Image (cartoon, rainbow, N blue to C red; front, side, top):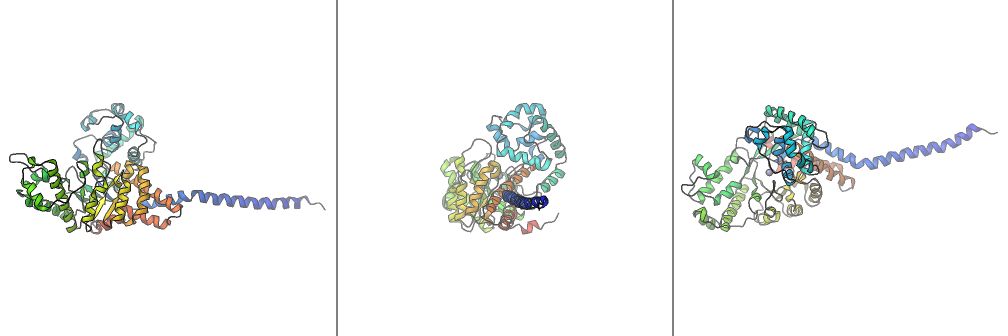
Length: 469
Ligand SMILES: [Zn+2]
């Protein structure tokens, strides 16, 4: 007997199974296509839970920059983005003038150059800082949205101490290394946020700029007089430099920093003591450029020897130079090769991935157990270069040799730098997980290492981190 119901049933059963199969396929297909995003999201979220050790900053308090009514354009002027804007034709700025112009006038002056930079990493990380700390979510800065931001900046900077404390912790920092290029000899810093790194540029550079009789002494010689040191010969000069290094150590300095690539080559010849002694004894004005260089070269070798004695890692600027117009070649990383050969006991930290010589930095870090790599500032210079370089660095170096730092003057920009840094690290590691090159567990460990643990170990921060305020 014909039974329409059972015929319908017979048809419905395969359709039912087909549906189940289709749903299952869609489910697994979705899982496959989102696996990378999921790994990225988990690594990125893990990075947000790390109390970050930021190995390089130049944070300045507003009063150190003069008496200004801080607004959006002041922060912009003090940021790296200003360099790109000058490249686009902005033509510089004057902090005092910024105080006197209205936001409309400032936009008329800088708006076009700012807009031409909407594609750059400097722009991106600067905007991310406002995203993190001010809830800014528009794709770009505009004449309209800047006025609201500027009012908030002005309000925050009226009570800067409170604002800095909140922003510092909201951004995810636990400790920043402070390189005071504007106040090299100051050792009195706010240890709730900072650890000292002693910038040694003047110790090196001033060795060939000894004041002549009656001449106004340069920085280090003035400082020596204040501290009761008389500098007549090289031994006196070295004794005073040693005093300064020890003073920094007494104030819990965690490292030394050489940023001489901004003013000279980072190739330091090995100059014998007797030759340096003779060069120092002569009036500095009589020295040829080659002789000045020799004296300075001697000084950096001497400083590295002290760094070994006091167990202080030496951070060195390599590669790209901030602001506009300079001699790029001066900071080429391989120029340091002789130092790595001569001082296996010293710890050298190469900054900025040596951009554009990122491969050289990876190679040097791979060759020498005592050469470390700091990604500091690289994601802000070029996000994509940072991604490619970190991938190469991870191919070449054990992961206990990599650090991260921000390298900014104001907390807003540092916050944006950290966001950029975390994005870069998470993107590179998530792709490796997806390609089966490493487990997600290892990716999480490497993230923790880059943003915290490596710095704690290499710069011996345990005691500093135990501080309670
Ligand atoms: Zn710096």
